[in-house]
Length: 473
Ligand code: BES
Ligand code: ZN
Ligand code: ZN
View 1: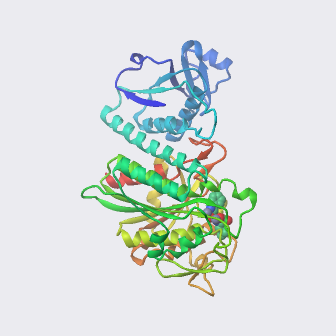
View 2: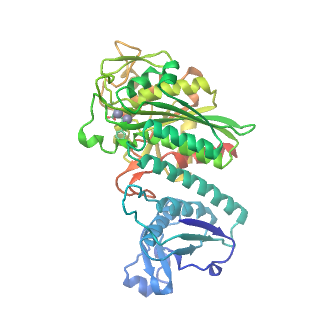
View 3: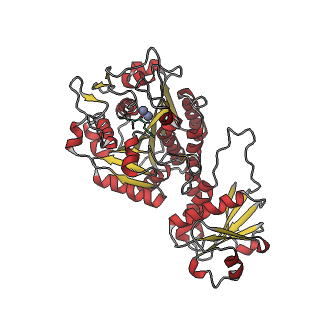
């Protein structure tokens, strides 16, 4: 779908149909009030009504808010994609909601068809956003371009996540990173098993050992001249998580191709940052690994020495993401002296228990920094919630054998104890500069919600770009 912004009145663009927002309070005074009443249209958000003979698509909007514009546009686009209309136009009445409407169109219109032998083809090709004379055109145009870049990066992440573990192996992730680096002029370093051994990344190597698809460490760097800040992003890239010898139950294993979503997200973030030309140096590190079973698999009872020298008692091979991140965080901090370090991981089922399946868990030591992400998430249309650390929870990952244990001794607070495990691998001077995002729930969905259809959601991308844009200002 081609989405355009034009600087001309609504009547000047020739399209098949026009999209019009309508609130319940304006329903009665509408020119086609009786038709709408016959159709039982009430103006509820996400409700739509085609007035074909008037070449109009009426879209409900209960309240004027970013979220409602996003949802309404998602419904409108989905409905149009199921018709034979080829083009539509609309005018967003207020500049404040313009970004949300564009997001709704671009993200709500996404669907992944690569594995269908007959991909669903839609006649709908062109959506035109029309300039409103009350806007500051240049400002709106810049919002439009920024929104396009971020939404495209989100859809890029969704595509990556949606690929099967057979098609998107650790090497597949490395190849994707390499082509992204060429397209966007990024630096790209890939470590294979030998490289990981040379770096002492034994925890990551242990997780990947039983797989016939060997692990890769990916480092992408976007380096503008005179950057205002240096930001490190780290992503969990488990291209498949079978649980390892602590094998997952059959039902829980399904969807575990999405365990690479954090790694995919940081690739999407650096893609967007570079396309926006931010004055911020961005580094994206991905630990791309497959957690499998086999005669040489790592085991519960193993003790691993991570890159930073700490020893880890393994009591559950399904708590593998934190082992991979332990080494990647160690590597990232050694290679880049950043102002901030953020990691994104589908780390724990417990995060979904705590916050529900739509919300990203935010954890770390710096309250102000965590709060700044809540604001960025809210501006960007993502759900985030802070899960607090405390010294009691910290004690639950003590090990009698090694420096730390990879699972908690108690069955509650698992999202937080996982983050407290990661904390062992954050250097002292970075403690206040680190935030961990658990995207276990928010990164993937099997039923459509908000702007998301079946599959990867691209969680983290919009929020982080919003945060980076604020730093860039
Ligand atoms: N990748 C999973 C977490 C996950 C679960 C993500 C469901 C998305 C949906 C992670 O590696 C895992 O298996 N975590 C275990 C940790 C436990 C063994 C301490 C979990 O959450 O059960
Ligand atoms: Zn696992
Ligand atoms: Zn996992």
